[in-house]
Length: 202
Image (cartoon, rainbow, N blue to C red; front, top):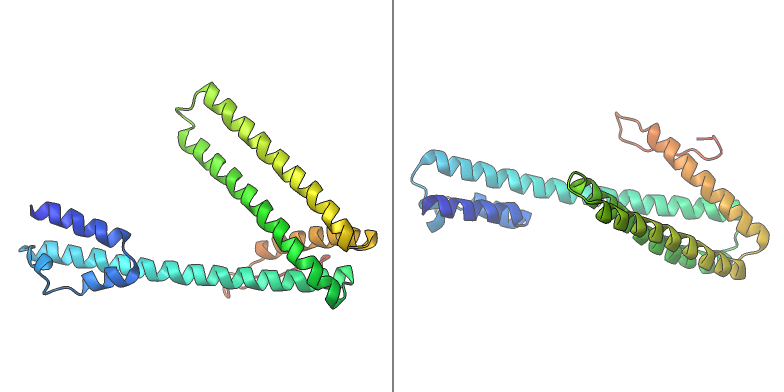
């Protein structure tokens, strides 16, 4: 019975949020905690719950940091595109919401491809030829969706940008991604700061 309760509490600790795990870790006088007569079991339970609480806290901190980086990248990207494409304030107000729509849909397709590849790697040793054929078909379908999406939004961009601005957009997008990749590769390990390069310049 004691082992069953221990497994149940450990499961709760593993799946609970930080506050719940912390509450359990502080429950030294609780009825459930007193079910463990062995001090070693109690210490093991406390250590596990405290570790879970720390992990939850670290996960929240990482999510917050990723969100800050994402927002910083979006701001820097829009500033760079506006400058390189020579957009007026009014043009930028029209263009960027459409670009955001396109990128959200494009990222959704990318997430589907990532999941598909992850599923394949998980089942790689047991997958049949028929299963692999189906995955290949799904990958081709996702590639077609990406191509169709680009054609759809290319036509929309043509209605809100001049031909020259549209060309400058493609150029700016390529340079931004190249600069971002180079910046990530030159990440300062001491400060964890990202450095960005555009057209080969810092």
